[in-house]
Length: 150
Image (cartoon, rainbow, N blue to C red):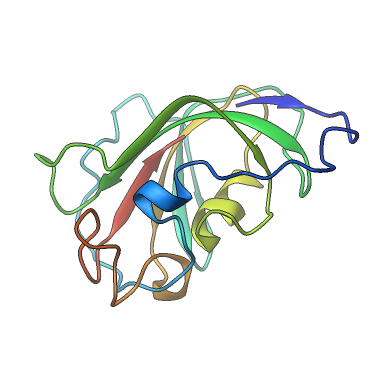
């Protein structure tokens, strides 16, 4: 994560991202106990919240990401239960306002636990923090478990 801490950029920034193409719309899904399909053995630390599990694969600086910050994020999003499925969304440099509700709740909450330069695998574990029973057809099936490499 690279973060620009200037507050002047917050005004007027509208993050369309892939909201219309991959449907980053908060919803719900059912958790699963399946193993991560993208975690590596070099992971250093696990952070668990009531809605997600985050495994840090590369620690960042001590500068935390805060609500309302402008962050430039590299990410890849997967269906965690299908290791052969291609990513349903990815970006090399996506600017976003942290915690603005554009992404699913689990993404927003996990991003706020990260530090600048950190790389983590985030698995959403709470049905209220993902896409839920409706999914986002045809990209994300109903009750899909999601995994983000952020």
